[in-house]
Image (cartoon, rainbow, N blue to C red; front, side, top):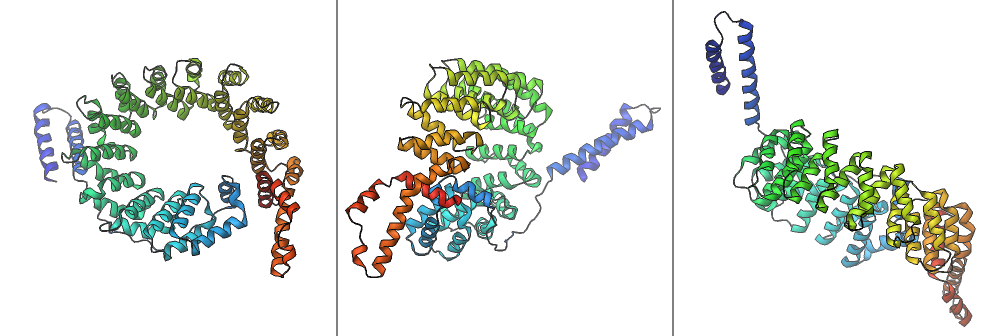
Length: 535
């Protein structure tokens, strides 16, 4: 308060000098009040102290429940995992398997985000002594964003010293993914103590979990001269993510500084845009004239937070930038904001045969998402163009299907590939796209895929059926699955005979062996699908 008192005293002295004796007393009081308010605000900012929060140790809890829709979504990624046999073999592996097998399965169910095993995996975590298994389990629940292991992970964050590095890494990642507020006191303490070993990990985690208090706490580090370059870069990115407006002036200054590290400048340009201040837009528009293309790309990242005409004009300029990275970032902004005025620019980029492939592919995807008449006309034209490559047609078709546009034209293209074997790769690629959506419009095409004599086409047709469960195709799938059902029945009969001591019927004869060879993978696949959907 001494600073405020001195400033107020100074204000009275200045006002006595500036204002004549006959001046309005109210004007004098207003001037003093304004200076006092400014002084208080400055003192509050400079004297901010992070609340002295005690470390939190969350209670243990079981995994959360998952809906049938969430389970079905996971199973669609690999229909082979939908069987009771897979469930039993997985649970048996958790109980009796070697560590290498358990780790392999944990990685598999993490990649598929399969929630059917959460309770078995949670129990395994409580029992295992293997750090490798614990790490994989933390990653599995992090992928599901399930906070059931928050107590363990926060305990590691609160005291990471002397712990296995893989578990520390997994715990920091876990608290970030589940947005653990309980981890914040421990994370802040690491930053406050400047623990170099864990500084960056804690900083990144705070960026995912923190709020305004954490932003103000970290803002004080902007003036530190002893931070190394990776720490400064990470700090700038985190402050931008937290929208720490208290640091705007400093970050704006760094973004403008031509002598500053290029990555620090880039991250500052993005960060000031994330803060959403009007003066940031003005500055970013000016900074787009910088000669460094990587910096210009981050300027566009920053401008992506503004949706007025001034920002859009710069975005349209960036679509014609000489460097492809800047063009890519501008296309991402068009997608993010749905800038319909950019459609002609995107069409032009697609038609430019000298354009980078990654840019053309991105333009096609965004054109389909914008769903404009001009954009759709171009994309459908690609499907019908005999000179266009099958790879390009597949990419355009995927973009159209993702956004529900041009479906009849994509179906027509797919049916044309079934007429001969000249475009097999396109046929397979289109089939994989149809298998993502399960639209009723795909039923007839699904039947045609399954009727094919080409095993790969037939298998792709089964993938389409597994998603759409078309009643009109059900019988064709049953017919395809029948040999597999016969095979299973014969195997069961032989096993029963063996148990009963009837060795004469326990082994298949030559005819049965030949029949077994006829049962192809698609028959077994069809059986698994029918067992899964109850068909």
